[in-house]
Amino acid sequence: MNNKTYYITTPIYYVNDKPHIGHAYTSIACDVLARFKRLDGYQVKFLTGTDEHGQKVEKSAQQAGISPQDFVDMVSESFREMKELLNLSNDDFIRTTEERHITSAQAIWQKLEEKGDIYLDTYAGWYSVRDEAFYAESELVDGKAPTGAPVEWVEEESYFFRLSAWQDRLLEFYEKNPEFIAPDARRNEVLSFVKGGLNDLSVSRTTFSWGVPVPGNDKHIMYVWLDALVNYITAVGYPDQANDQYQTFWPADLHMVGKDILRFHTVYWPAFLMSAGVEPPKRVFAHGWWTNEGEKISKSLGNVITANQLVDVYGLDQTRYFLLREVPFGNDGNFSRTSMVNRMNAELANNIGNLAQRTLSIIYKNCDQMIPEPPTAYAPDRTDALEQVRTHLDKQAFHHALAAILEIAGNANEKIDREAPWALRKEGTDEALAKMRQVLYELADDIRVIAMLLQPFIPDSADALLSQLGIDAAHRQFEAINTPIKAGTPIHKPEGVFPRFLDEE
Ligand code: MSP
Image (cartoon, rainbow, N blue to C red; front, side, top):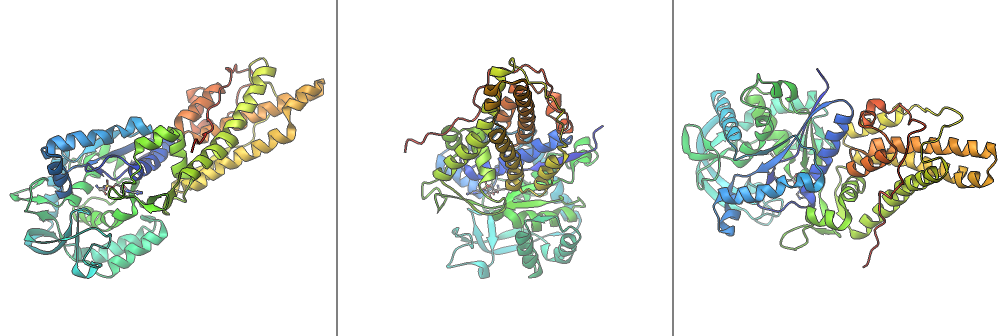
């Protein structure tokens, strides 16, 4: 039985929209971590899905002129298709309209109620449908939500969650779990928000009906965020806490979220869980937002970049690579065609692609189409390279992890230029040819390590490289990082893995 486990989640996506660069970003980041952990010997659960209730979705269905159920069935499908489109390795896909989820959401509600943390009153205040969030008068900026979203006045009977009573326990929890909120700047934001005092939270609505009915009073439906957050425990079988999935995977190791939904995940969610007697997740990481050529991305500006467009124009692994390489994870980033093309050409096509293509072509032509026998054994300790990538990824520093891998490629490129195996072949003496075999063997093994470490980021391309080198599946797991490539392994005629992007514009 494998006791190293890892449970990672994306936010569940609202089904009012087509998958775009923001959704792709979160999902790809999670996929890289899930793949890394599997290769590193962990039993992994990677969850994603769709958030299908609430006023925003109901309105979108009305605008589309179809029933909410038909609407969510249709749109959630386009999110499910991200799995193929982006080569995601999620193990489950949850929809909040599923029976398993409705049971789970109602069960946690009952726990909160038994605990005395839910009471009935009246809500009178502002609500933003776009954000699905309540705002205090004092938070409004020029009559709008701090996010710029329009707000409407709501006055209705509502259940409340006694969030105010959880302030001290939350602060104590953050104190004891310094890794719970990342990056640090975000942690500080949350801390000062909670220190500023918490109001009780309205957790039900009565003026529309597209949601999970409140147990015992179906005039009310549950607030969509309470409903949505529960998905993370539904997927491990809640309310059954004795089952295998729950025992193996809860508490989750990481909820990946965008910076806009941090408060829901780091204030409301742990309070709900603690109230229900469930352990909070171990970590929430908030990443930044993408702009498009310097502009905020929005439907009204018509500059939304869909996940489909990215893959169609630039390619799948190129997209995956760019999104995690371009911007220090946690910061905001700007998408531009120029920087995308530069990264693809300079780093994938030149640094890695050319290195592999040059090395393998010389081997193919001059070493009987097999990995040559090196005169001197070459088996450098690769533990450190792996450990560097692991440490960076445990902090969600994707850009550092990739930089560490590129450094190995940089060293190999220096080696090939310095040792010039083509010149050694031309020289043709026994000594020169022995040296050539040595250099080519070393380069092949360096490429093996680079490709192994790149597997989580660019799975198809890394697979192609490892296949060209004749590395079998068992030797692609990280425990085999120190098993050098076998001399005598036949190789196929090498084909370029990373095409250069020729910009017609
Ligand atoms: N349904 C909620 C999440 C519930 S989780 C219990 C939601 N959905 S969303 O579809 O609106 O957003 C999903 C994610 O996409 C968020 O993490 C958000 O930060 C991210 N992004 C949306 N636009 C983005 C960019 N332009 N750039 C980067 N990420 C962005 O919120």
